[in-house]
Each structure stands twice: as C-alpha cells, then as structure tokens.
Amino acid sequence: MATRIVVYPLTEGGGRRVRANGEILGRARSLGELLEFLRRAGLDPDDVDLRDPGLFEWRGGGPDIWE
Image 1 (cartoon, rainbow, N blue to C red):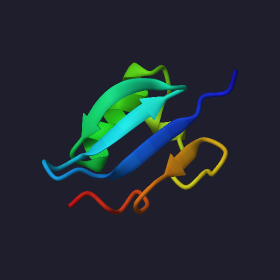
Image 2 (cartoon, helix red, strand yellow):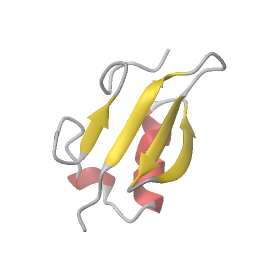
Image 3 (tube, rainbow, N blue to C red):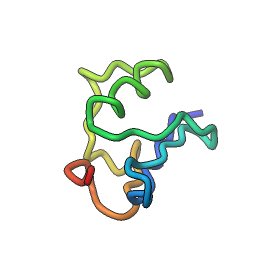
Image 4 (cartoon, helix red, strand yellow):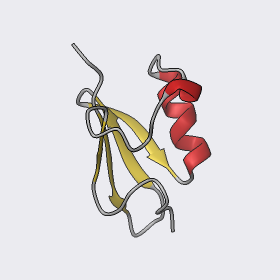
C-alpha cells in the first residue's frame, strides 16, 4: 500500500495534526517537525515532494502554513 500523509489545519493550541495511512503521527509545529515525522514513518525527507498530491492531503493550507 502506498503511503498517504494527511496534514490537518492548525489547531487552537498550535501545530497541525499529521496522519500516515490512518495512524496519528503527532502534531507538527513546523516543517522541520513534519519532516521528522515522515522520517519516523519510514520516508526519506530528502526524497519527498511536499506538493505531491499522490502522497499528501493538505487540509487548511499547504506546507507553508504553520502559524
């Protein structure tokens, strides 16, 4: 099964919830934290295109929205 990452809108407490294949990875407060979540999920952050619609579903703004 191909990996599918969902990044949710900003929360009131800050950060964006992140899921990979339905599993919650955590709440990323920056792009750097998101990349660390991807690494822990087995993806190479250097090889990931953050704008790839086949890999990412961005809700509430794209990879430039963190605050």
